[in-house]
Length: 165
Image (cartoon, rainbow, N blue to C red; front, top):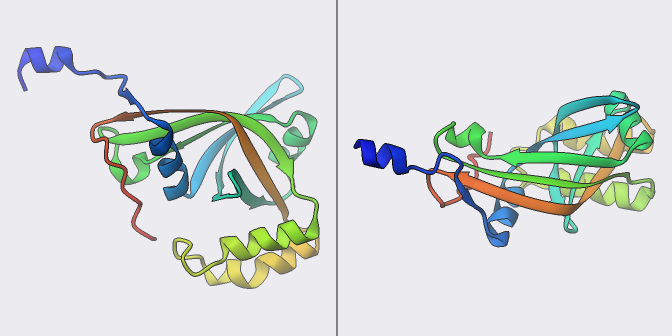
């Protein structure tokens, strides 16, 4: 690479269009969520599925849930760098409200959706125990409906679905 190519390279990446943003969200399965409440901040990795135009997941009680209930506005980040590395990535950042799904029917629908065979190698323990644990109140279903989505990419504009693990 020549000096002109190095100095002309856009290290900040390019903006993703709305279709590319949606593809990143639909193809990935983990996100980082930032919570802020009572003067404290907390960032945690969570698994999710894109369902009904929202990020949906299941979690246990604890610090993140306590903070979300105290202050539901969250920020989140989803990226492909786990598959592609630091030189070729697609990243989506957003904001929204963290909502606990309290309706048993909606929670059951979510657990069934996340355990479908086409989900990236859903582990057997998840399929067997999750609906039971949600019904018992040991796990909580949640969703984030994005109010803001932005995205950038570096390297290749092509977004590939990750290999199932």
